[in-house]
Amino acid sequence: MQPDMNQMMQQAKKMQQQILKMQEDLAKTPVEGSAGGGAVTVTCTGAMEFTAIKIKPEAVDPSDIDTLEDLVLTAIQDATKKAHEKAQSMTSGLGLPPGLGF
Figure 1 (cartoon, rainbow, N blue to C red):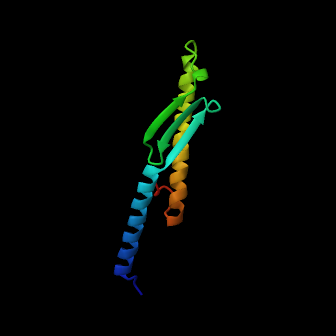
Figure 2: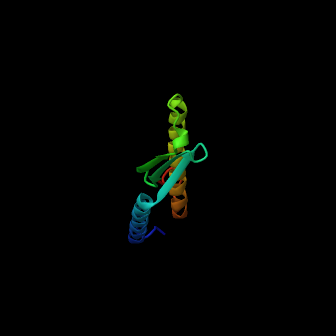
Figure 3: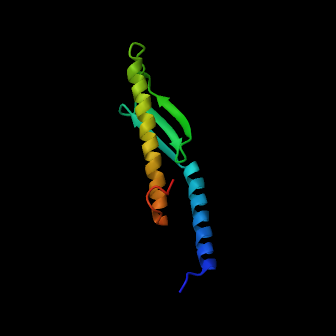
């Protein structure tokens, strides 16, 4: 017995709608990454659009710019990791094979 093509097409369309909804939700979901115990905080959306960087005054030492640069980079990496984790958790219910999510 062959699968019903109409049913398969309906399922594919439903899954496509779910993915579009999740992408919209991710674009609105704020994700925060930080470094240095909160000395540097970076905010982005789950869709990886960076929206803010906050740097506490005590993180700024004009004689040690390298450390500040490392803190900013670490905070960006933390936010990126959390955004990816958020996307993974949202798509886990779709039953997609690994790598086919967001």
